[in-house]
Length: 124
Ligand SMILES: [Ca+2]
Ligand SMILES: [Ca+2]
Image (cartoon, rainbow, N blue to C red; front, side, top):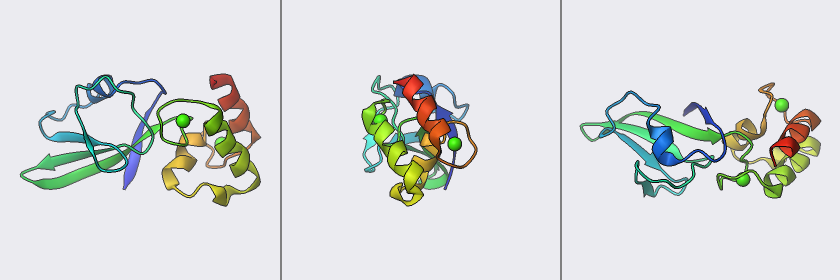
């Protein structure tokens, strides 16, 4: 599983999908629970959504969406995300899903610290 399609909170699915050169008929986007999302949807992108490139019924590529600062996967930056960081600062194991750690590591140093906490506060 890879990631790298980091994006800003508030991005709409339809705008996000325009970033990709792949023929849109081959590119599918799903919610964390596996439910497919209409690629022309104006709903908000959230951490944990994922993309699949499907050619001739085979998944040839897959990537997870990371919305920076969105640790709980609702697409918005709120006090809930702040709480995730607060817990992670004292106990890194409180983040149980790998992409939460990436979404909340706002300075990309691979650690969740007070620096990330302060950055997220500024995003609220
Ligand atoms: Ca959130
Ligand atoms: Ca960090």
